[in-house]
Length: 622
Ligand code: ADP
Ligand code: MG
Image 1 (cartoon, protein in one colour):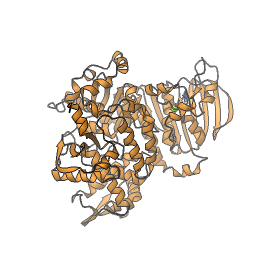
Image 2 (cartoon, helix red, strand yellow):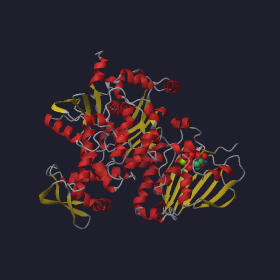
Image 3 (cartoon, protein in one colour):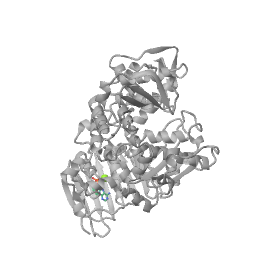
Image 4 (tube, protein in one colour):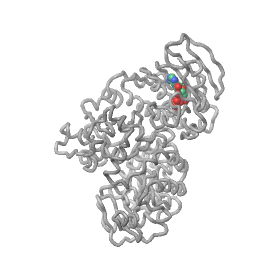
């Protein structure tokens, strides 16, 4: 067999979003486990000591590497998984950047053992600080074992940045579960400090879910399964009675890759609407498969966020599939489970997504079918996806507080490709005379507002998220939000972990209107809350903040403060579907346009789209 690894040409390498691959032990776990999956292993064992700080080892029975490949695998941009830029748009493997092993070798002491089935002996390589210390032949079974010791031994600053062992171990377990969930036909085990924590036999997805999340889900899972030309969805949701008070048992996989998506989460929550308490979190493990050309997984350095070519279709599909499943299992027999009427009659959605159709979907632009029949001008141009690098670039600037220049850049890139009918930010600035005389709300979600050259369609939730986010920044910069002192201070007991979070955020919370005082023994006294928190809801408000903060907190690229702002804005923003009064709409519109970056949410979603009157005139032959 020929060797299969080759160096990527510089130009491709540079086009690939780099990002820091290894930020903590859990990131190495993810990369090593994904490599084992990519190698076709049927058994993958993870061993960690000291929460991965002392040792992370992954042993697999996959295809192994030749002697040359074993050496080559530690070079930066060395990959056997893509060969040219086109491949980037059809990725079928978990890895593809050829950076993980190079990064791992740069920050730890690595011992690799690998053997291919057809070779007589395997290869053993020892690497220290990227330098090969030893290489020799070794007798072993087919497969690969990679052990990385003393993570960040040569980067003390990084090592000191690591959290406590329980916290790092929790991240490791999260990553382990995400991979294990996605591949129920692979055996996985996790051993920590000599103790086996997970032992997951091969089985069905349902069995895997119960193995991982616990027996309480046995007989409490509802199967979701829907196929269309555009995408397939399958998996399970927990029956409404299994909903929990904290998020956690919620997993989305797109083409078998775990992703985080508040947007898709919202779609599932929408399907559960009315069936669970407002503050309940249903369990779900859902797999979405669609043509890789319809997504861009390169928008995030650790590949946990992706961009859909048309996320509205995915949203509608997910929501109706879950509704359908819940209805079929006669949990709510009267439910209306039709797809959004604008989408359901399309062939693309109503016909099954067979292999044949998959390939024809890839060649004929399916995208056009959707866009021409439905609101073509709302949908972004296909070429935008190809600009994933541009989209990725501004995100780099997001680490600190609000970066308006980056925000403007994003909107300008988007604007350029959204002709006709899109007014640029400059054009808006030149026509601030927005008429807030009478405002129209559509679908309890969109606010229409006009100025003398056209009109804007504002998404109320996105807009409010932006407004709140900037308000929070200002609060900490010297315009604190007023605190309403409680007449009868309330105590709140927290877990040790939550105590830690609150202690770290005490200062910021105070500026945001939450006055908390430590009271010993894992309790705080809530002395005051912002005026808009109703009496009696103080505890819930704090619990929600913690919940949201934890949800956002695996996102390492943001500071604590930034995470708090983002999670609070996200949590408190008025939701789509909420009817608004004239007065509320007026305030929202005025607040939005006095923001520094009125055009996008902190996460980069548009808050409004603008249309020019003269474009409308043209459409009507005037
Ligand atoms: P990527 O996964 O993006 O290709 P990595 O740095 O993770 O980059 O790995 C580099 C290469 O090393 C892979 O493309 C693969 O050919 C090889 N490799 C890594 N881990 C394994 C493994 N467990 N089994 C077989 N080959 C592996
Ligand atoms: Mg890899």
